[in-house]
Image 1 (cartoon, rainbow, N blue to C red):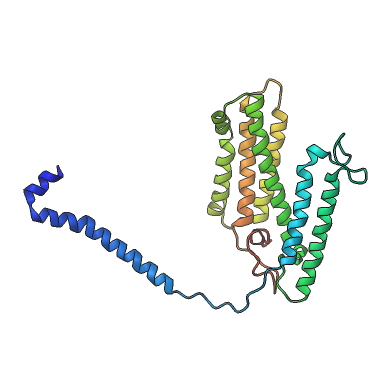
Image 2 (cartoon, rainbow, N blue to C red):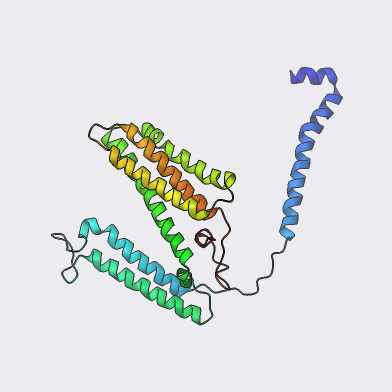
Length: 274
């Protein structure tokens, strides 16, 4: 087809084809290269101070968390408090509980060190003074329970569907879709359709929806129950999780006066106006 058209129209067709395809691509590539070249010339704003990394704090935090987590991971082999027969022991106790308390002690040393760094005027690894803000700590607690319940649902319900009811992986995934649907709709829809609603009201409603979903799930569990018992609880739980996410992240944070302005991430979602 193309060869026939080129033969019929001659050099004009060849020129038109080159202009519309090859030449257009070359011009587009030139534009991209020009943008990249100009972007390389853009200078960032000069940095007034370059804070040094708190190496001692980093080592203490990593060591404390590592000791505690390693102890928990070895609990099935060593036992929690009393050592299992034939297992190692430390002063008559399981190494698990010893490692957990050792990790907590190292984390306490980390907090002491961070307060010391802050008093010297240096840049600490974490500003623990943020924990004195009630809105921030309340947001942390809310985030903790939100992700705890979310992780528990995504673990227990697929396990129940695949092991107890012997559903396939595809059928199990289909059965838990309601949670994702309501979660995404609530997280994106509440800020869009209710931009002026109180974050506290949204958070309370989300917690009630999650609680109602869990109660509904427990009340529906029976020996002869089928996969249909998880639909309504997942819808409610997804609605609650999405509402909590929208309440925590849809507004800009209100930082405490005079400090913590540079703290990114979770603090911007936890410190909310009343």
